[in-house]
Structures are given as C-alpha cells and as structure tokens.
Amino acid sequence: HHSVEALKALGKVYEKDGALWLKSTDYGDDKDRVVIRDNGVPTYLAADIAYHRSKYDRGFKEMIDIWGADHHGYVCRVKAAMAAFGYDPDQLTVLLLQMVALFRDGELVKLSKRSGDSVTLDELIDEVGVDASRYFFLMRSLDSQLDFDINLAKSRSNDNPVYYIQYAHARIHSIYNQVREAGIAFGDYSETDFTTLTSEMELELIKKLAEYPEEVVQSAEHRAPHRIARYLYDLASMFHSFYRQGRIIGVDPALQQARLGLITAIALVLRQGLGILGISAPEKM
Image 1 (cartoon, one colour):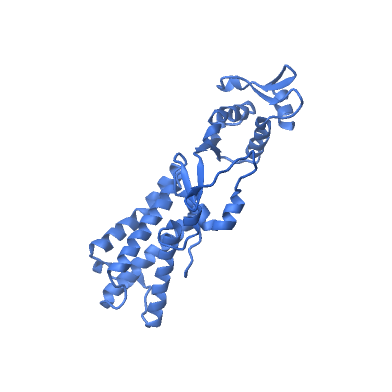
Image 2 (cartoon, rainbow, N blue to C red):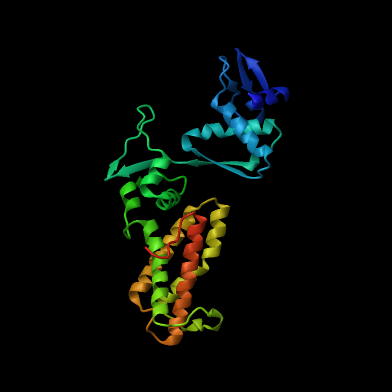
C-alpha cells in the first residue's frame, strides 16, 4: 500500500471502477494494470513493486530475478513500475526458467498445487543434499527443461555427475596421501620441469586447464553457470581417464614431479569451480 501511495503521489496510479491502476502503458506495456483491487486487496503486482522498490532503495546496482517462463508477460509491468519511480529499469534483469520435472524410480513425480502434492526445495535438499541439488539445477541452461532424477542425485556412482566431479578431487588427495607415505617431496613447482609432459592425454589436460579462466568470464557474461558445471564434468572425466591410463607415482622422478604438478592444477580448478557453484570439494569420499 505504501508503494502504491507513493506512485499515486507521483501521478502514476489512477482510480477506475473502484480499483487502482498503474499507468504501465506509459512505459511500453500493452495495457494498464491493477495494483489494488476494488475490494482493497493488493494484487501480486503491488507486492512485487514494493519488493523491487526496496531493492533499488537499498542501492543494488544490478538485480537478477529468475521466474517461471509462464510469467514472461509480467516482466514489462514490474519494469514499468520501476521506471515510474524514476529508477533505471535496465538494472533489473529477469531470466526465465523452463519447467523442472522430478523423477523417482523412473516415474514422473506428479505435483499439483491444488491437491497439495508438492515437493518443496527444502524437502528435496533434505533428501538428496545441497551439493547434488545445486549441481542438478545448474547443469542445464535456464531455457532447457530439466529432468531432475532423485535416485541419480542420491547415488554414489560415476553416473551421478556431481559425485563424479567430487570423486576426481578426492582421488587426487588420495594420491597425495600415497606420495607422503612413500616419502616423496613435491610442491616446488617453480623448480619442476613441465616439458616432461608430452603424452597426448597430458597435453589435452593442460589445454583444458588453460580454458578455465575464459569459461568463468563467459559464464558470468552470459549468466550461464551451466557452462562451469559442464566444464568441471569434462575436466573430471579427462582426469579419471588419465588416472586409469598411466601411473602418476613410481615413474621417472622428473616426470613424477611434473605429473604431481599437473594433478595439483586439476584439483585447484575443480575446487575453485565447485566453489563458484556453491558445491563442496571433499578430500576423501
């Protein structure tokens, strides 16, 4: 009500048929929108206006909302109200999200608001954990439908992408433990000769690591965190192949040092990338 009164004072709200209307057509909307119904009850739009006004007033320079794709017609209204207050509507970005379908035991989980059969995010996190929940929601772009397989998200197997990535990180730490037990000193990478890394697999891994900074930049610019999720999966996959193919310890000392340097770089990127996604990087699993 407070925000609507403020808009009224600015001459941006008028009364018609007992209801209060926002002059959203002044800002490119196809028709004016009701903010207070004729029974005095505010519409959803009034609540959203108050919410976003508070964000602007608190000095946020960039705001990103994620809404369901069925709300695309609503974007113009909220931006119109912000423009009516004299705020820059371009500081608000609305990203539209396609539907998420939940599967359990291969069956679609039927959800309905009316019958009260719904699964809250809290319940999903309680069941599959925060790491898997985050990864599964982030692994697809917003504009593609997400099939969230609850059994897969809970499984501790290489078919589960988040487990697969975390396992690569933990595996590197288990190699460190073997190295320490064997009394091998490592870690002075300024003194390490990396030219010993000549196999195709090693060179592919180095190239992949070199792509990481640009992936982060692109993910930020395009607001596409799924790029990082996919990148980490690919890096983990390459590391697992490398681990199966060749020995990291028990080889020529110079090569051993270089390989330990390479896996340290991999662990660092896995940990950082998971950190960006808000996912833990366990050292043992």
